[in-house]
Amino acid sequence: MFVSTDFGMWWGMLFTVLLLTACVTDIRARRIPNGLVLLILASGFLFRVSSSQISTAILTSSAGCALGFAIWIGFWLLGLLGAGDVKFFAAAGAWLGPGPIWRAALMAALLGGVLAVVTLLRQGVFRDSVEKTALALSSRSLSVLVPTNDDVDIGKRHLPYGVALAGGALMVAWLPYILA
Image 1 (tube, rainbow, N blue to C red):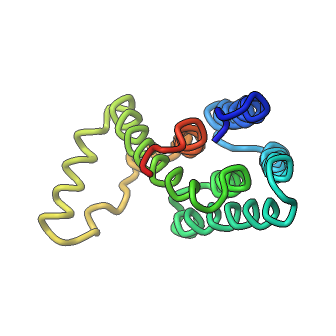
Image 2 (image 1 turned 180 degrees about the horizontal axis):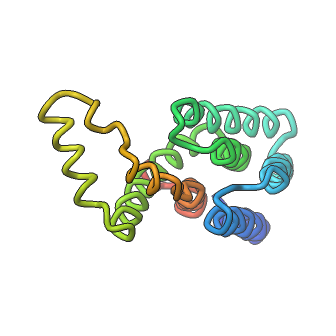
């Protein structure tokens, strides 16, 4: 998406810096500031306007933003993702547009799975998590997945899912034929 021209390369570097900044804030504070999300959103619209006709640019950015939001809002409603993550991915959609945002979401989900496994391993609860999941599958009951007091303490350390979302968006932006 960015590698075709020098001008595109500068926009790509800006996109990368903005998304990496979001990663840093998500890792440090487990939140992505609204001001940063708005900056990503506005710069995404500017990028699109600078590279195509204004009506097409606005439509493409708006559709990417709406689709990025729609993909992840259900996870927020279920309490599985923070609102900042959903807004962040929607803002990235303004840069990518509706076609690439689907691939970015798939890549983010894959990266999120890896991030979750690494986090469980670091917290020393991977085996317990696998055993509970196997028990839930074998008993055909999700009741075994209800958190205990020990699980609640571990659950307070939220996964910085913005890292996975940024990774998916950056992979699709810099490697536009991935998953195509």
